[in-house]
Length: 152
Image 1 (cartoon, one colour):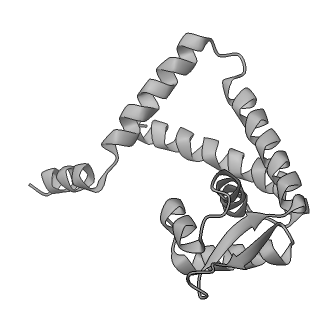
Image 2: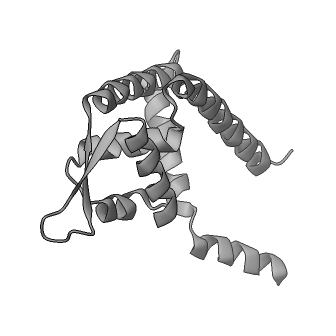
């Protein structure tokens, strides 16, 4: 197996395991990991408009709208019309939403501890550095460049 293939396989496997655990933890609360991410963002930007949330999560408008409606039906958030624009809404967590947010933060901390368990600080810093460099390399320009070089 090529090094790139092995790396991709390990990253995919790691993400899959994380998603499986996260879904198992969140399912009793009726939410997905994407909705959990949205709850955290709502807490961090209390009173943001739905449009502001859409621009921050970089997910399509209809998916965010459905997720907000679901979270509202679960009574994890409330939407209030903005006085200036009666068509727009501000979004806030409810007390139930705050409790679920606390659970999500605990899950995140447990993941961080699990992910770094047994690793030295130097190993963790090296991994962070490598992942940052990888993230910077993964873009459409580099992908097209590699794709075109193979065609020549």
